[in-house]
Length: 312
Ligand code: SAH
Ligand code: AVI
Image 1 (cartoon, helix red, strand yellow):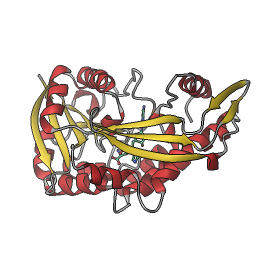
Image 2: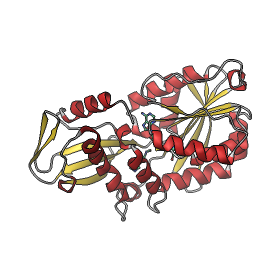
Image 3: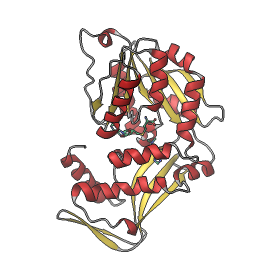
Image 4: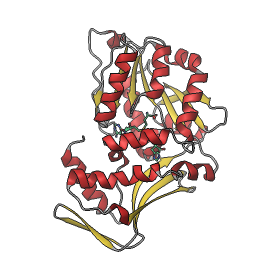
């Protein structure tokens, strides 16, 4: 759960904009996290498979870059799938997964405790778009070890370039001058491949998108009629991003407490951006936030990049 007050305030503010919009971080309640895990296993959704394959293939180099025995801080850890490869190779002093989804975080931490009984795990339930205090305790191994921030999955693509810059600045401060960052970034590619990845044949991405309205109904007592909205995703080439929307199929109004929102037929709520970056484009962003592009690893098909950044 996120604090109910900020959820309500953000939803009311977003639906009051001329182009209605909702922050994508609210996709991830227990149901949303499960639907996202199902997306990762779809044949059309290449990012998870590509990043897992490239991480597995280059794990020796990646571990040398990050430094064995470092403290590994992961933002948006979800089910901590790729992290397992890193944990095995790095034997970190501590693993600190940070996620807004309490449910996903709890399940992932329990599975990791079973698999890596020697590992010091400090799960942090929090929002990385706000300043976060990371509990690296004095007197523990994690206090003196090198800090490495891991941010896989191209979750950075769900931030605007300005938000991504602010996030990189924050992590630059957290890792310090000796630290490093490993960050998974989806590459620009043929729009047809992107279209398929965000419009899968089984409709799992549509269910993930619509679950945001179901969550607003469940937690804020709203009366969205889900059948009156349709999932819509497309590549906006000018902005370099996939956009997800929920389109109202009729003229209608929706109530949330004593707020009423009117929709015209065809009007949309913009629910997510997923920015795609060239290798050079991302390096330029990282450089502006105080990082040097140390290394970059791509999968064999050139669909996805893992950037190794060091503080400059
Ligand atoms: N890292 C995983 C999951 C990516 S999905 C992977 O690579 O497959 C994005 C994850 O980030 C979800 O688990 C979601 O709950 C989390 N998340 C999204 N916005 C967040 C925020 N503002 N603060 C913390 N976690 C967030
Ligand atoms: C978590 N994030 C990087 C995913 C993405 O591809 O932007 C979320 C997602 N949205 C639709 N499908 C997957």
